[in-house]
Image 1 (cartoon, one colour):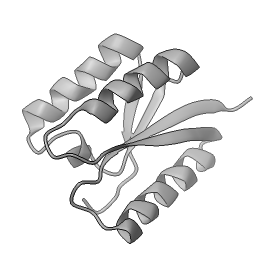
Image 2 (tube, one colour):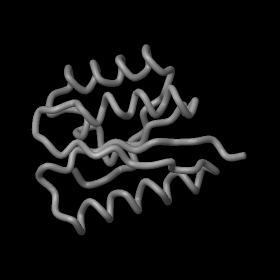
Image 3 (cartoon, rainbow, N blue to C red):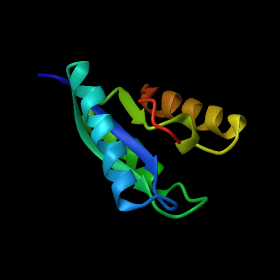
Image 4 (cartoon, one colour):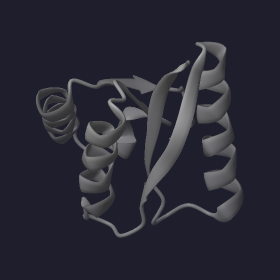
Length: 104
């Protein structure tokens, strides 16, 4: 059984084509490592963290240990916020965060 990964991205300022392209990139990135992408949690409101809370719940439920993001900018605009989100995910779920190398 392949390991489970979950995606997370901010979508409030992205078009449908960009969102789909980033999600495809995450699926391929996961598959190349033998993982299954269970789903992508989309944060569609600027400044919100509702989807992040849903992600934590999904990781706990599935036992997933991998979170994929198009880039670390999806975790926050500033390095300090990015580090806090990474720390939160690691401390609450044990998950590692991986950037799939998206353009934004």
